[in-house]
Amino acid sequence: MQSSADENPASDQAALSASPIARVLWLLMAYLALALALIGVVLPGLPTTPFVLLAAFAATRGSLKLRRWLHEHRVFGPMVIAWQREGAVSRRAKWTATITMIVCSVVMFLTAPQWWMWATGSAVMVVVAVWLWLRPLPGEGQRAQGKGPRAQRGASAPDSGP
Image (cartoon, rainbow, N blue to C red; front, side, top):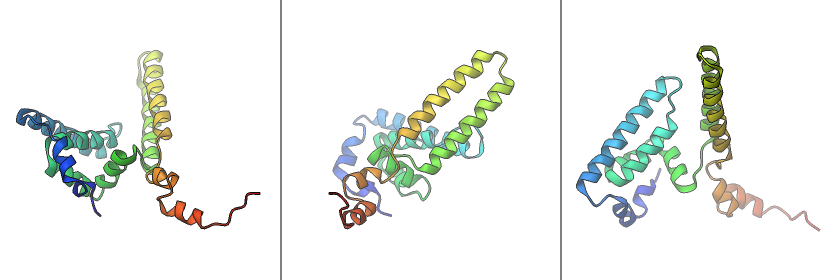
């Protein structure tokens, strides 16, 4: 898979922070976010996707090598590239996040000492779920612009209009 890290090296270099201290801080943030993402893979309730995206954001400013690694990673790469190009989230990630939030809401309902604690946490999760489901799927932006494979197939279909 070709990563977008190789598409425009000049803009990649421009995204790096000019200050060496800032680059180190961005790199530390990227590794911390990546560590939290990896913990989130095995720990229910800790999300993986937002931490991977944060790691990619920080890596863009701190390390071209880490950014390239994230883009070329077989699991993280497609997610990071889809987010950076289109702000898109896969259907699988949406379902996983939604189910995790539902489970967390049930656990909070059963364990929160006050009803408002459960209500507040659940309300935040509902807002996040709505926002998440409003994000496009990867490739939808290209299809809408007539660049994706479905859009090209649709263009060759006969017009059923008047």
